[in-house]
Length: 357
Image (cartoon, rainbow, N blue to C red; front, side):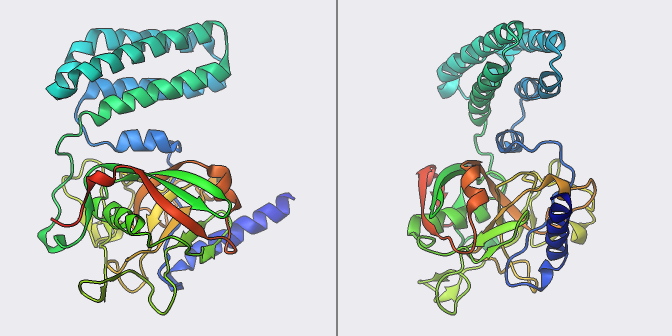
């Protein structure tokens, strides 16, 4: 069985290296990124400037190592420090929240404090299962607070793309398939044009009934190729295929990269704000001939830890990630070329779609 698995992994790796010869479908291997939880990646990707809230988030996320090793005393100390941080910096955090949201923020801060107290009780009881559940809900509330800081957070988009739709924030979608349903969060803060094109097409029903045209173990699952000779979305107003530029943000960089790969700008070891680092990363496909001809086809990355040695990177910086599957991973792992999308429903955030600038 080990030999069979190794063979399958090698086949997937060879396929990844040769992907540039394929139809508009590029994906690859993420570099060794320690953060593989899509919820944590999405929290980290929120572009806000409130260091105390970010530190609180990272402290709770950082309890994983101690929890796995059952270092209960270390966990207790870490939670005490988190509670002290929240108590001493609560007023500063609250003042950073826009005034209309501050009453809701007060309640959320109380909920976070209660969650940390509950985590301490679960550490005393050495209850790992309840600890995980409470930490997840507490981190979700921290994420809600962080989202309140996202006023006017969409980076400037070059005027040459004014005709394209854009998503001004985040949206949640349900991807119904012949194997079941998945939930994904689409990020317009960091990929407004890519996310906007996807949500626009989902609302139009473009993806409904389309098959998965490519499925490779440990690699990618792709759809979005319409029936007929076209390979993308034809804009009825122009009668032309709508093209979305390659769009990638990098932490610490003031401007989004448009139609430039990491190699083009010399960022050989950079990690994008939205990395291909977890099962179900949503990526936008483009051809090997051009970076700006992605239209409607997207893929879901099938993360395989054994194919992610540190420094090996065949997709970050070459394709745009625009969101993550956050629920329904069992469905994702069952899908293949005999399956299809039934519907993609926007359950939250449709009002954040702007048709054009």
